[in-house]
Each structure stands twice: as C-alpha cells, then as structure tokens.
Image (cartoon, rainbow, N blue to C red; front, side):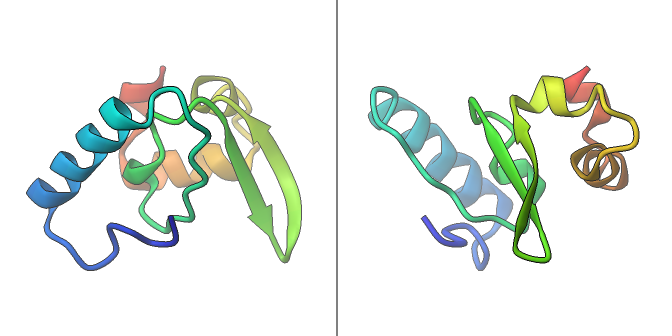
Length: 84
C-alpha cells in the first residue's frame, strides 16, 4: 500500500489499520508511509535513505539504536515510549 492513509483523518486511519491487522494477518503487506504511526505495528521495517537500505528490523529493535534513522523519526514523532 502506497500512502494509503496519507489523506484521511486519524480515526479513519485507525479503523483501516485495524482492518489490515485483522484481515491480512497471514499475508505479507508492504506499506510505504511517511507517517511513522502507520507502520509501528509492522513485524519488520525497512528504512531507506537516498535510495539505499539503511536499517531493517522490528520497530522495537530499531529504536535500540539511538544513532539510527528510525530512532530519530520515532523520537521526533513522540513514539519512543510506545516502542520501548
């Protein structure tokens, strides 16, 4: 899904995420997102920078690297408490 939640309100985004988690739990879902909250429940996150893979792991593992790109995004977005 490419920016599936980019132009919807937070309540609709929440419902969409619940549906994805429920109906696609046995499938591989590739999500392209600019909102970090959209991918926090993902099993794995691939972080790109300048077209190159710079990080790939679970969200909880990625935030352990305090020098990482994902950590900085989570910090800026106020998501660290949810992930630690």
